[in-house]
Image (cartoon, rainbow, N blue to C red; front, side, top):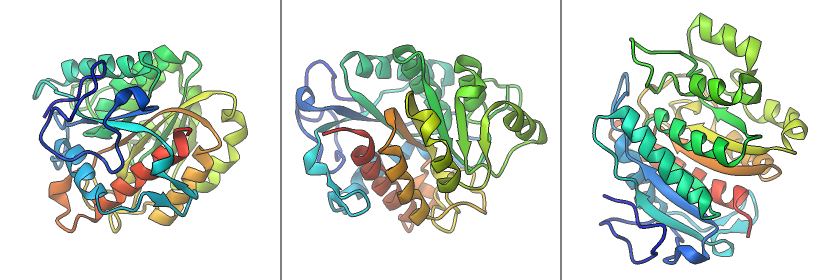
Length: 295
């Protein structure tokens, strides 16, 4: 499965569904939706490379209208470019491919919305976002801190992605929500250096809107921020998470910010035969498009 060419819009160049409501012409689109089918460094249960395709497929069961935001997908133009072709098993090169791809999306003046895939892929996205927006802030929703320098000797890991982001833009520009798992050292680092809000999402995020309002913001959303009762289809499920109702309220907050990029990561369809995780993920993507992409 390969991505559709950004410069020469055409019919889908791959066999598979596009996300509900996608335009066929990138020239009309304000946003590009793309997949990052990667699970090269997953440390527990694999399968996230299958996430982007299945999120697209189940999106066909959604309504295009969001009663949470009172907006409709018909009111915006976005283009589903398919999945980026990544070198199987090569984490550093895959991240570099993603970086160059998202950089091209920004150069085309489009809003990038990525589907994962393991969380390490976000490193490529945020590198491109920080280059396009030097004053970038990052909102991170996750069960895990992801603040290690390395995991079992590997610096390229889904457990290190936010530490790489902190090293790039500074930890004082990183806002972490919903965290409930990590090492003692990671929690100490977060408490001292990032804007750290463990366990909860909506209430603490509402308190920082004013300080984020004047800055470009990239949002990276790990599906495991949810309690596994709602989203069991992920590689490293962690009990004690948020419920979907709270998550949908979060998009009303994001709609007030200058969001310049978004990704939804770590959906692993093989871990959820009920497909509730994938269906939830598709609904989150709909809300992200409506909250963050201006008509």
